[in-house]
Amino acid sequence: MKKTFFFAAMLICSAASAQVNTKYDITGDGSVNSADVVAIYNYIINGDPEPGPGPDDYYDANQDGHKGSSHLVYGNRTGDIEGTPWKFEQWYSGGNTSMTYYDNGTFKASWYNVSEYQCRVGYYYNSNGIDRNSKLFTGDYRYTKSGSAQYGYIGAYGWTKEPLVEFYIVDDWWGNKPIEGAHGTKIGEYTVDGATYTILATAMMNMPTIDGQGNFLKICSVRETARQEGHIDISAHFAKWDEIMQGQAEEIHSSAGGTTSWNLEVGNNLVYVTLQSEVGGNANGSIDYTYFNMTAKDAK
Image 1 (tube, rainbow, N blue to C red):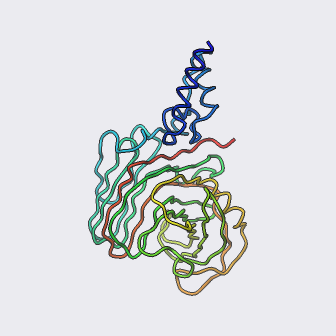
Image 2 (cartoon, one colour):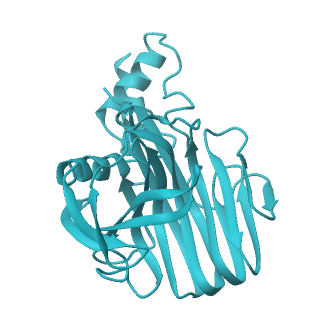
Image 3 (cartoon, rainbow, N blue to C red):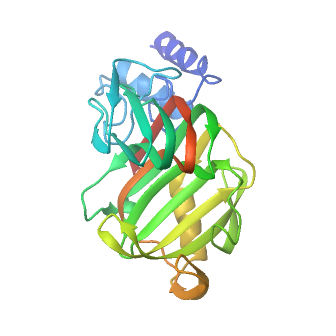
């Protein structure tokens, strides 16, 4: 029995320096550690059920590279990625586009002369959303990009309700870095995943929403320096937003011009959260996510 445990421990520890979320990350916490050793030990020795989180909590994206069948997407469309808890979505206005997703959630896209383009993969819930504090959301990615655009955001993206909020966690960008003024009013800074993010807020007036035309708050958390691979602790960003935005009224930039008073608060009901690329302004280019993984573990 000791030999078996030692073998399991050596097997797991040999992967400790490997890409996060390998098959040895049994507990799905993004690292290989003693908890994974215990899980395999109990499985081999004690006859426990095969270890590993359920499909709603964690999915192994098979490390780098596009895996499985490719699926070409044309037009504005949302659909399931079979065998995973994720959905894909492509939306654009003007020009020509295409998106290809793979069975392991990786995806790539290209666009030509578009006014606006969005491609993304992630968790989609019902129209009422779920309690965003009931899950611990993370995202891991690696991609390459080419082309140009007047503006664009790459990172995490989603919507909440009650109140209605469109949110971005911007790890990279097209064109110039989003800054205070053109992209909103600065309302704070914080540190997550070892990097500083600046929160920019805009009151979007009579603009398209997930519920039709209306008014809503747009939040952009912009990373100090851009990157094209990494880990996003999305729920940690939620927690920082809750600390900084507690429903207080502040004068912020308005899409209609000037400023307006707005109660700063992120909705509790999460409708969807994704990893995405968004570009706009006569944009031409491509992006290729060769590594993708998102988790939504139950909060304890």
